[in-house]
Amino acid sequence: MNYPNQPYFSRILDTVGRTPLIRLNRLFPDSPQRIFAKMESFNPGGSIKDRTALQLITHAMENGKLKKGDTVVESSSGNMAIGLAQTCKYFGLKLEVVVDPMVNQQNIKIIKAFGGKVNFVNFPAKEGGYLQARLDKVQEILDSNPRSFWTNQYGNPQNPTAHKQTMHEIIKDLGKEPDFLFAATSTCGTLMGCAEYIQKNKLRTKVIAVDAVGSVIFGTPPGDRKIPGHGAGRKSQFLQREAVYDVVHVSDKQCVNGCHNLLNSEAILCGGSSGAVAWAVQKLVPSLPAGATIAMILCDRGERYLDTIYNEDWVKENIMELEKVLA
Image 1 (tube, rainbow, N blue to C red):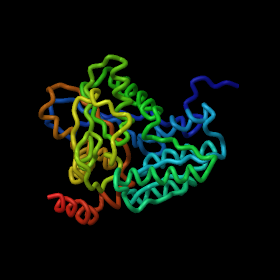
Image 2: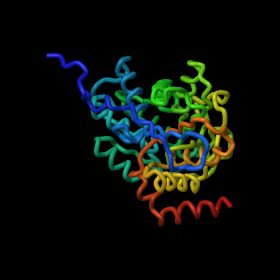
Image 3: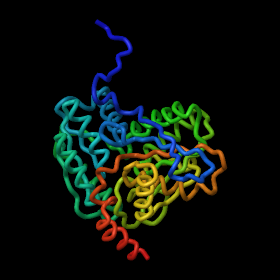
Image 4: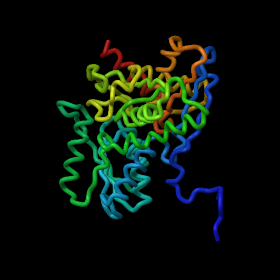
């Protein structure tokens, strides 16, 4: 018997995407713009990386690069690993992820709960920092296992492809394209996927990248960063600078402030990169046209940051101390 228009999903992975867009009325109450947040925390694994993970895995399976029982290998600061862990669990794939000391302990517990194996690197590479160290370890695992596959979120074109849908959803829910889109950077998959959709459809949306102080993505000097999820120790393979209207660099302290501002004003508990995006919007709002529509992508939920960003002692010990060193 067929059940047309069934009001349910057939599997957990079908709930990836279609995340809500929320009007933020309280964050900047005096701003003359209309500000919206794309709530990627509503994905089943809790972050925007669920979109990327599903796209990378299904594309590899459809093209014969992965089959049940194979091992997926990836470098991740946490959210990508969780997205992959859930997807691999569903499809009967093994998973090995490589993380560094910035990873949240809660993320490690979630990855292991899904059956993923967690490999640690404890020291940064001389060039490329912790990211390069993680990638070196990825290669070591690939060399040791002939039935392993690297999803390569840093260079696989399926990463930005996944986020054309993200931009499509924003426009569909708004009923028009936003005037400005704020998105955090790391691999730049989200940023460039949205930008490619904008370019292809000849939209007037201006893309504003939100990067971390200490990240080298846009050519600024490398530096210490305590909050994972945005920024990188090496250049992005996806970035097309001409597609980006502007870039805002956000410090760890500003990240924390942005998170707490979202929590205190809108009751949104979000992760570090979302706080960075909120702070970047706050910085640029005075210079943006009155009446403009602003969309910002909030990448993940905040429960995984309760021991860090939302822990007063951790912030005092790590963020304030870091700023004194930088000063």
